[in-house]
Length: 420
Length: 86
Figure 1 (cartoon, one colour):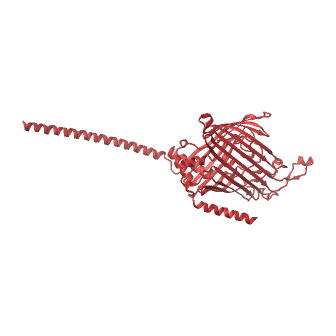
Figure 2 (cartoon, rainbow over the protein chains, first blue to last red):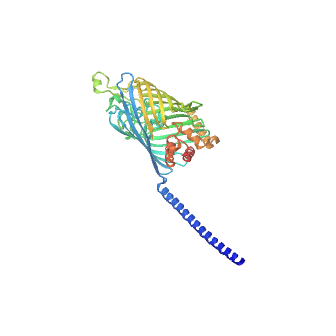
Figure 3 (tube, rainbow over the protein chains, first blue to last red):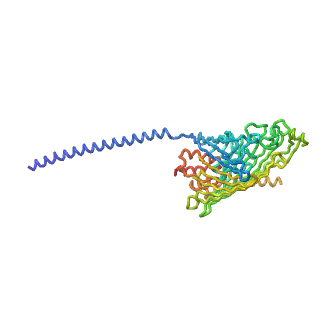
């Protein structure tokens, strides 16, 4: 009996072992299948990632768009949507050191970036109602590992601070550019040439630098457009002489948190007149001082102040009056001290510390600006303008702006802008 | 007068070169978050990191290094921070 019991136990134990072994085998096999499945999924994901991942090169299309409304305060003649434009910005990274950046400006002719009057390359007011393509900049860049940047192409003129930093409508807190600045303005907006720029930490402060060599400005001698005689043209595309303009900007950020920037910039062209003409040796110089400051006011928000003073001098030259003017008794030749001055000061306060969404997204802006061109020139201008504006930020790069401008041409502006 | 200007120019350049040799510890120890807030706000409000993906931030970083004249160290720290938090 004892032997039978032991025998049954051995048989039973054997069965249990066989069953356990089979189950263990099944479990192991199931586990292996699952692992393979997971591995396959990982492989698939890896393959997919390999397909979509970016190499060293890459491309990004960004930019901004806006529509601007203007209504004159006095005679009400100009009551219109003054400007609509789209400015795609192309960024192309060829490698860690090679880069290309370009901005196209597609807009209605008759208005420019900020709703100012557009002038063509000869200083003539453009036709309204037609679309206009303009190459803002197209800049090929080589970046060294030390942070020194070499570039060639068409680049924004680093004179003052507004042109390079504030010209996109989503950055400029007012719907219009300051007097004299902007496309078709009396100050240069872009250069065709080569540039070296960069920044260096100098202890707790920082120093930025830009140095460029470009075709430079061209003197309008009045042969085709006598009313623009003596004015500089910044078309850049065709150099009218062998001389090049040399310019640059030095920026100093004395505070360790980079909230204050002081800049000095300039351009000098030894010859701006046409080759072999009596204007060949006329020179031109531009110099500018700028400041940019912001601070975080506790329980209030961000306060910003910026300003720019620019002076432009063109060498002495005699210009011819038109035949009709001469027949009326005006002398054939005339000259004037060809010196122009433009400046602005802008401050803004965004109440971003407020708990209420409306105030959090609100910003108040004010700007005083003045432009004086040569007194006895035919394009004389002596204007000042005070702008008071309100910005409602829909998000970081998109806003509604309203501004009232008081000055020689008082007007109300409205603008909706989206930074892409 | 010319001598004075030459002396002033040479002195300024020498001072800059000497100061450039040693970066402040306070500057070097700044992280990407601080630099992102400080550098972007110089011209516009700082965009949130989720607005763009890693690859796009690389391109924007190069673009901003040119436009806003950021140092190599600043760009690297800012982009690293934005890519870590997007």
